[in-house]
Image (cartoon, rainbow, N blue to C red; front, side, top):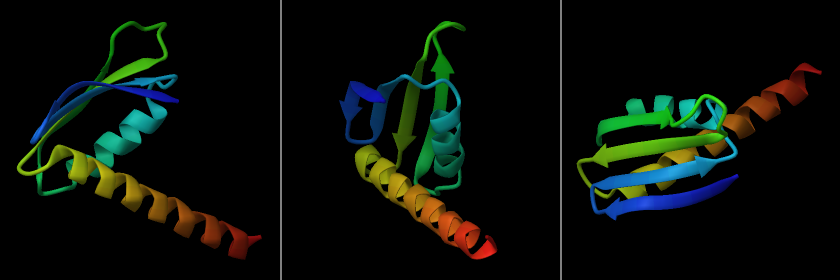
Length: 89
């Protein structure tokens, strides 16, 4: 997965996620939507056959910080799921 930053301002971040369609972008969008510091979050696929999602994030504070914290939260959720799965075996 490759990321390319298109727009990088304090409270706004626009980036492209190469090699992804909905799996990671939708998870990220859903988690960001629940954050009170997020004013707007969305992604779009530029073409139905491309593996390329364009992501837009607007926040009250630092967009990069909100994104980094959200990715850490997702990692924690995945770790908890893995532990639960291992116990269920």
